[in-house]
Image (cartoon, rainbow over all chains, first blue to last red):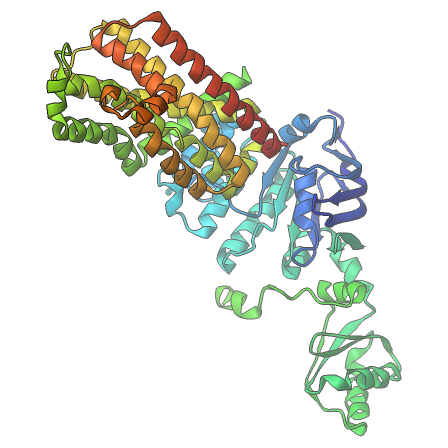
Length: 331
Length: 255
């Protein structure tokens, strides 16, 4: 088979639910073969709908989609042969052992005999479940279930792997384990990965190419570093005790030379400036002169959240990974 | 053939789930024995009023218990597929290359093997208690076929309701509500000649009676063609109706 340049091609995709909700609204993008591609957005942005549509589970309303060189409408069966899917909700049979779950999945993917036995053992080892393989999956922890589910998605050696929020609800250790498997699969096995996430750090660490989605529409596209570069410099974040001072604060910041952009955040105001370190003294004096005292002030490199804030006026914070969660593990 | 391979895979899954769940396995296999023992002991004296039946009430009861258990088992497939639907397991297997009909076939085979196993256990225990099946081994095979067919026809109702409402508790509630009158207003457990005439009328139209009459005539002897044909025709009609609903709901679920 000739190598496809674009393993996923989506043109003007619209998905409307029967109750009239427009979950995906005229979205176009493509994913190159071998890419680690991410769909970042808050809860309810349309990420799961996108994955369910691309993986043949949901019917699209209009638009043209091809996955792994096959037309979504004409050859869903061929598409299912090439893709592996990890759904957001972990779906394993809790009555069967881990091995039996994986073995059944392999049979349903039309594997047989010795090949299936070997592949099952190989994957149990890869996801670190070889010692728990004979236990009923119902006794597995959340992280183990996710790893088993991931192994199921890989049993037939798919060339394209879809993952719908693969680490939502996992503890930091399991999350990092999943990240490492995925990076290894992409780098060493050449598996193209399409992942959705609401975690900025996850998108930033894993994805080489990223689309940001909100309310069913694409708001930005590009490599994480490119996207972050577009916000125009470092971020100066100010928290205000008195929310009514936001407008006045914005006005003052705009007058300071070097400030490229000023926006409201949830608890105050953010400004972006190339030379943030040099102008910070001026920021503080100007605010002080006008009687505004920030309760908190920080300078940091821009994150994907800043990209999202600029495009939508809101922040993705709902269930963001907090420092508290990751630190104990890293230490 | 994908469909055969996949049916076998999912049938094996159903059996493993059953064997790996001792509570479910025990209730399925012990339940018929409870009915057999309780009814035959409590109503032992009924045998005095059944002239010409050498096995007494126990011989009368055994074929009815087989049909009763087939009915009671029939909601299990619906519960199972509803759980798969709600847990996301069904979505997961729909994302594989699995043959779609095999998803239903694998489950139906599982349920039919449960009732066949139940019936065999019941027949063996009844045999130990002195019941002889007058039609011999071919009769036993026809009994097993009848209970499996009866279970199959009824299971379609619960499969359709489960996929439609996605609530396993609806299935248990409905089966309890439906089967209590269906079983007691039938010839399954008691001779209908003991019933008041209004109950006899209900019993005469009750599919449980039709199915019980077949198994009873196979146990006690004297199976007539009309008993067999009318029962199979009625069960066949039920199967067509319930599976039309099941296939309709299944198509909705998988598309």
